[in-house]
Image (cartoon, rainbow, N blue to C red; front, side, top):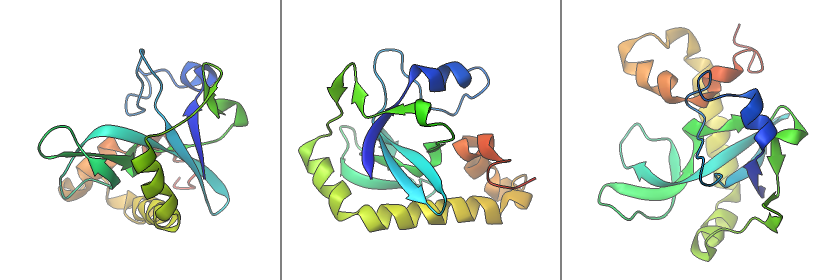
Length: 155
């Protein structure tokens, strides 16, 4: 597992008007964790305002600043890394660093993160044919895996 950020090339190849679920900020990049699941690599973003709801697919790393929110990594906004030019280990020439408390949680949770990401992908694939059913709709509408149907061999 490594800390990475997505590059300008990734966002040039995935413009927000065509890929609205990818997390993009113009003022700063998202820090992500790169994990290998089977033969694929994923980048899972850190987020600071994750809503604490039962349909949230995230690992809590720290309390949030607002009630009902937490900081953590969000599986639903993961990116399947299809090109090594899509990520970098630094931001503006500086090695990526994360909050020390969160870093400790990530290190202790390495196998859990890999297991939960694998489970998230399996759930996505298993129920893909039922994505239009009302109870499944939100899960599929907010997931960035919708942009990787071919890579996930769903069609």
